[in-house]
Length: 450
Image (tube, one colour):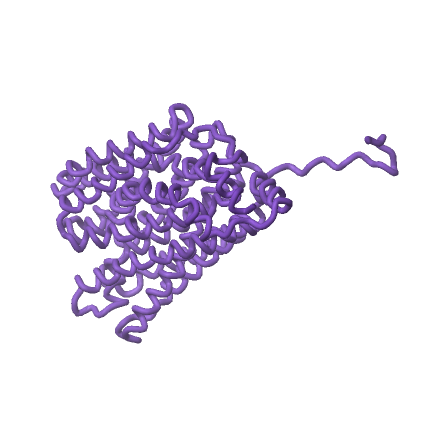
């Protein structure tokens, strides 16, 4: 029954406007940029502060120990995926985003004020490990929460294009760390960099984390999540996060395998190449930072193009082009880098990042389209964090420990092949309505909950 609009039955108030696209992109982007900034600052400045956190009598051993802690930080990511995945799927995406960026800021602050090995001995190494574990927990929840939040806000016909903003903002954060590294290494002497210059980027990261927290506190939850939570409120208790992981193990395994090759290529050529080039390949710090900056600018420019292309020709096609192209070019680009000229390093990084962007660009959309709303953050976030921990986090350490770029390249190519074959087993999901069930997986979830 309807009523006339009288003083006793006033007209309903208009629905409040949903969050603007600009705020959605800024809110997800700033925290995501901070995550990438944090991780690249650590990898890029490790050559300077390794002797401060460990015994400096053996600089090679100190550097390896520092890179090992870089890898250990990734071990915490799956636990972060569990914790923040639960928060994201039960409490809300925006709450997971806010808590993740707060934890990341705390980790950066701990490193910025880290006492030296010469002052407190092994306690310095322990505090560095603690800071990295905190950052690992935070970053294990940041990316899946941001990717899920953005995918659920994006128009489905342009979801791939919107998804590319995740890696655009992330790469901008990475670029900020590289530019800062280039500026500091130019303005300061080697002694100043080793003594205190390396602390500056971590202090900046801590402050930026608080700015990101302030922005995210005013963000709105996604309509897709709110509708799913309301529906689940009448359907009984939700499936346990860890139980769901094992019940839907095939999808979880697909996420791990399709990510393995992607993350190795990315972490070598985008995140750690500046440090590897200056430590092992004979490039100066300025050359290494400069080449990485140029290569990542190329990545930022091509990401939206690849994202838009995935909306037209499909996720699988773009991902396969990216992986196969990167695999074919990997060893030739390694040989080019060994030439020792800066232009060679620039070309190699640009080629590899320009190719892998074909997968990176739309990956947030592709992952989101594989899962139902009720377990989208945790279902993707936990296996993704496992893949990053097993393959991405260990890549710089393995590359340094092996010492042979070509041998490590063979390892990377094998993982690229595994990822390519895995993607061939997936169905095309371009343009999927994220509020719809996801095939057999949703049915299994419904059965489990019943």
